[in-house]
Image (cartoon, rainbow, N blue to C red; front, top):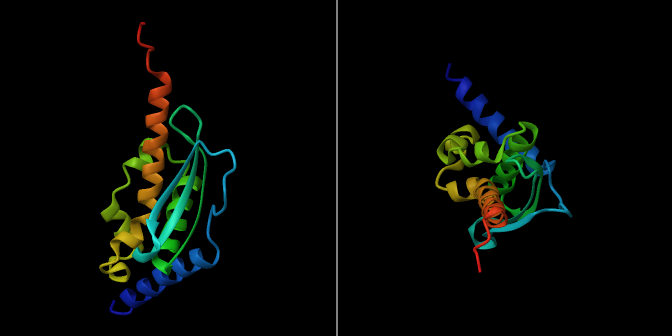
Amino acid sequence: MEGAKPALREGRIALLVEHVNNPRHRGVLRDADVVMPGGSPECGGSVVVYLKGDGNGKVEGLSWRGEGDTISMGATSIAMERIVEGHLTMEEVLRIDYDEFVQELGKDLIGSRTRNATLGLSTIKAAIRQYSKGKLANTAEPTPA
């Protein structure tokens, strides 16, 4: 069984590197409802998330661009793939637990760089919150004059 842990670790490293070399859903979404910047170059990376909602709690379009280290860029691509290809609703995305996400990536790989690993996911969640806030503002009853 001792060989399983190194193999698992190597597989997780390979997955991050694969996502860095072939990022999923990377690019500008021209008709995005929300454009949300996140992170900073000093903290392992920065991303911009582009979100388009369908008006009913579903993600119609989601993409990103950014620069940073292997962990921040790989994890952002992994989060994008999970959300888009899993057809997650906005509510389901908001319920993704950061600790569980880091465990899936490999806590042993991430070490103390949790902020790097969750940069993309936290920026996606911020974009969804911004979208939802705008949606609520647009559906609010007008106040009588």
